[in-house]
Length: 101
Image 1 (cartoon, one colour):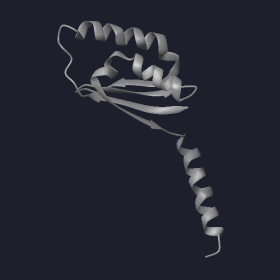
Image 2 (cartoon, helix red, strand yellow; image 1 turned 180 degrees about the vertical axis):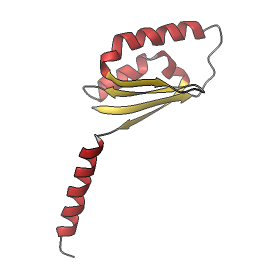
Image 3 (spheres, rainbow, N blue to C red; image 1 turned 45 degrees about the horizontal axis):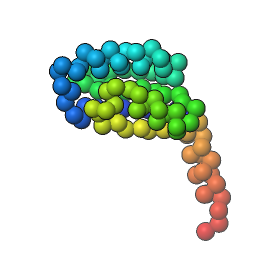
Image 4 (cartoon, helix red, strand yellow; image 1 turned 90 degrees about the vertical axis):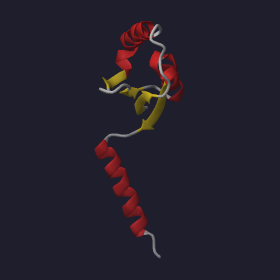
């Protein structure tokens, strides 16, 4: 299961906790980098990952273990590859066009 996970700041992190959270996030990345097709940070705060998880339970576990997720608004957008999605859409449109009115 592939999903785009976007985290944007929601709650302010207490300054004295920030060093530990950053260290925890780096450790999290090292443990889970094989599950990430892409991983990035936004200039104003927050970041994203393209996660390749076995299922929704594993995806949930990855999110709750990421230290920044507790201070973020997390959006999860499952997706299929672009060409595959377009081919599926074409098949659905073609099937609808073939149904008599």
